[in-house]
Length: 274
Image (tube, rainbow, N blue to C red; front, top):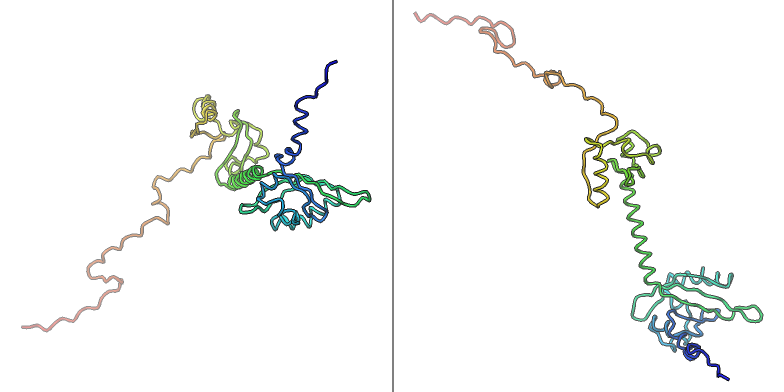
């Protein structure tokens, strides 16, 4: 009869169960209902920089949180845990020794005794450093997109976004003023209906090819509706307008007539020297 042997990995798992707990890729924390630490694994100690003796002194879990985290723990986390018996993906910042706070996500389950009273809280803690950085990047990108959208919306110039085929996707207030068409009636139509290319009909296709290749294009385009004719200027130019006519130059008065137009009195004749 052949001897039955267990698989090698089964013995390995049994021998290293304690190691798997201590060196797990996440932190394990067991606390009493008031938050006092009862048991903790080595991963949590490595992350925070504390020793096992320091945390079992005893220390409460909420004492390891930043000030905003402690406020949230007392007002939201602990009441929700008592009410529901579990919480998931709660974001905290752990205070570490000699280092910046560590962003973490906490999942916790409340265990009760035979009388249904809370006895122990088992928590699993994940390092959320990369996730927090990713969330900050998303928030920054969102703010930049909102600022850009505000600039496009309030811009005096016409800013239109289209698909590669020329179908209008966005139509700002400047485009409404320039083309006289509201955004509601313009989005979904082809840009060639409003702005046909000047010159050959293949010009728009060539511009689209350049844009697809990543080369910005600057081309002169025509409008679908011809612009109104400008008023013809008079032959005389601005000089014929009364406001631009020059005042006549004063003429020199005739001999014997003063500038005021009144005749002068005859000058008395002098004594005859003879």
